[in-house]
Length: 170
Image 1 (cartoon, rainbow, N blue to C red):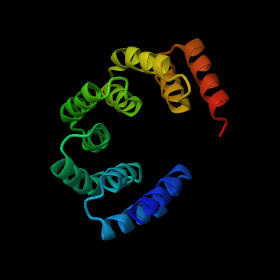
Image 2: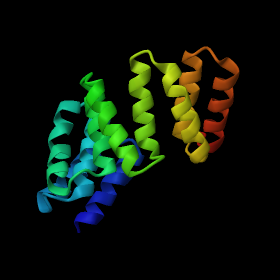
Image 3: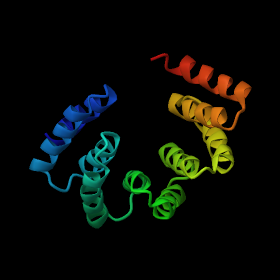
Image 4: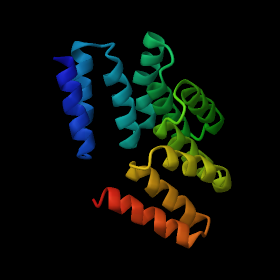
């Protein structure tokens, strides 16, 4: 039962119905308070919904209960980025990447944090490598396009956005 509810949360998240996803994940945790996926997913969706401070508690609970897991570290890093605690975010993301080299979400979060600090040139090779390893991920292409636009590489940005739209025209 908890996994079915968690899956409903994932469906709501994919549809960008973040309040519904939050509700489903909270329903999972009401029956299974230490459900790793629900803790991590709730944290991630709360960050996406602009509730970074509230996202911290379930992610820390997941860390205490299960130890470092790449998804949890990445989601906690997103909280730290929102809190402008970039050094901590970078360390969490690098730990996640040590555990799971090429982990796309961690690379995107690390690049996002670097961009926010005006270090787009440092983010560029990270995203370029991530796209090479996961060329089917539209969100990687889109983030690379946004970075290249910021770096004034118009042909590169246009190519990256075209690839993102080819993969996911929504």
